[in-house]
Image (cartoon, rainbow, N blue to C red; front, side, top):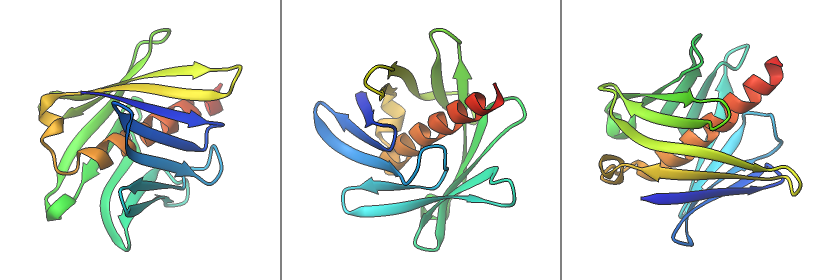
Length: 163
């Protein structure tokens, strides 16, 4: 399936499929990792933890649904706790000039691929997201889509900060 994520001025990313809204990722300020994920009528908080904020948690009220951390090799390791079942995923960055981000499960199966497209003049930020048939069967698919988008932004801002 193909999805689009479009942001205006970096703060609100709207994700849609065939023109229909799927969810939204809202930042209070760009380059801050606190955000809110909105899917239908549900809202989830995205908050950095610890002194350096290197672990980021996604909360439904007080319950941790997901957490991710950037590994030393640049991959983002994600643990989910939906329905009290722990699953692990990796979001990796590929390429340089034609870059993309890929979310894989522990077996290395690719679940989604995201390609950024930055419109510098208008400050618009877009991603094209393609999901696998496997991901489409997941109950938590939309939240994984939106958190992968957040991870890609996190990765890109970390890299920009290192330059």
